[in-house]
Length: 126
Image 1 (tube, rainbow, N blue to C red):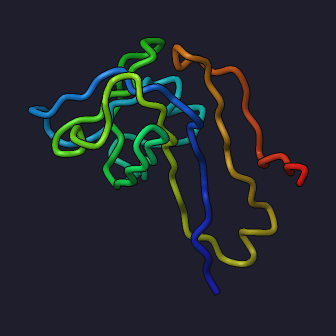
Image 2 (image 1 turned 90 degrees about the vertical axis):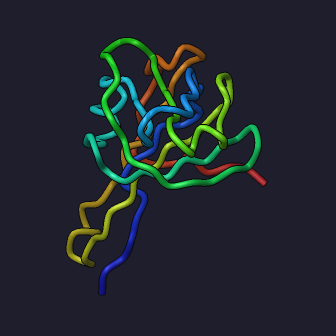
């Protein structure tokens, strides 16, 4: 059996640009791409915390240390500068691969600078 699992996420990054007339994609600071193990042109899912929009696009590289998260093309209708986003990547794993599986979870500050990384989401008290 194979399972599709969350491979990585950038949690609560801030959209810095929304470029309607740019070829579709999401430009992401190169530091964030590396931290989340997202490759340029890889499919990503974006969840907009501000308005509930959920959409699929692909990642492209933005300048390292720029803090840029630019939602481009038609997807620009779904995110505005200042919106908080979750950017997720998924992968398909076999049961054997899952024995060593841990996701990469990347957390940032208001300027999209990395503040922490984890491999699990902490349990929440009821």
